[in-house]
Image (cartoon, rainbow, N blue to C red; front, side, top):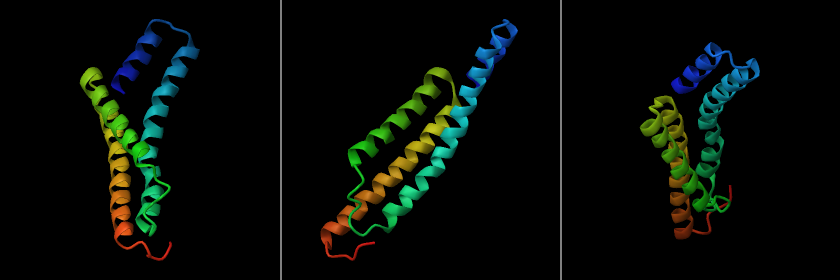
Length: 121
């Protein structure tokens, strides 16, 4: 995010059009706000998985694992190649929530496999 602020400041100093300056500031702010909020938006999915008694059949583990790896690798890329610690933290937070969803789903599927006659939620 520091890079974004520096870039916007450089655009202002260089006399770039205000449309570009405003657009850049909005993109940077949107990245931070929506990635921070997205971490919280995993909570309803995690709660649903937690209470599921049928082995979470609607959760596609391949998709959730791909999101886990995509978020983690994006955060690491931002940290290693752009020195963006905020980007690292936001993306690792999202990766952690994906990992929680995957872990709960795996446990629920194992439980359901052992006792498939559990009552539905």
